[in-house]
Amino acid sequence: MADFINPEPTPAPDTMPFWEAAREGRFLIKTCTSCGRAHWYPRPLCPFCFSAETEWVEASGKGEIYSYSYMRRAAAPYIIAYITLEEGPTMMTNIVDADIADIQTGQKVEVVFRKSDGDWLVPLFRPAAGAI
Image (cartoon, rainbow, N blue to C red; front, side):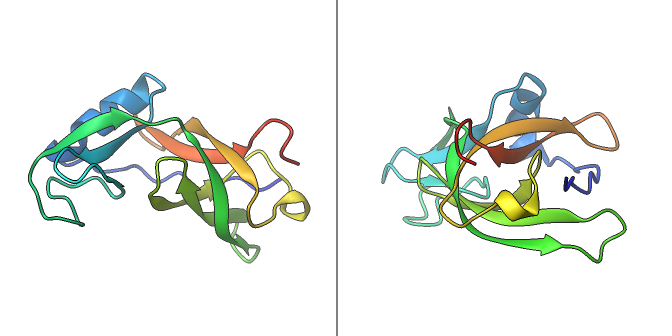
C-alpha cells in the first residue's frame, strides 16, 4: 500500500485559517464572493476576476481523480494525484489507503487528514467508500 511523504507545511498568515481548520478535521477552500468561483491554492485574490472579496468555505472533501502517478522509485513509494474537487478546483495531493492496482482516473475520492512530521494535519485523499 502506498503512503505519502509527510513534510512539515509552513503556513503563511493568510493560510492559517486553512491549517487551523485541518487540525479540527475540516477542509476549507477559498471562494470569491464577487464571481462565486472556488479556487485552489488558497490566496487573497481571486485568480478568475482578481477580486479581493474572498472567503473561506468548508468544502465537501469529495472529488475525483483527474490524473495520477505512482512514485515507485521513492524510498517509500507513494501515489501523487490531481484531484478535481466537487466544488470545482483541481489540487495536487497524495492518494493514501489504496493499492496502485486499484486506482483509476475518474475514481471518486474523499479527504483524510494525516499528521505531518510536525504539528500540522495535511489533507490527503483516499478512495471513497465503494469506489474500488
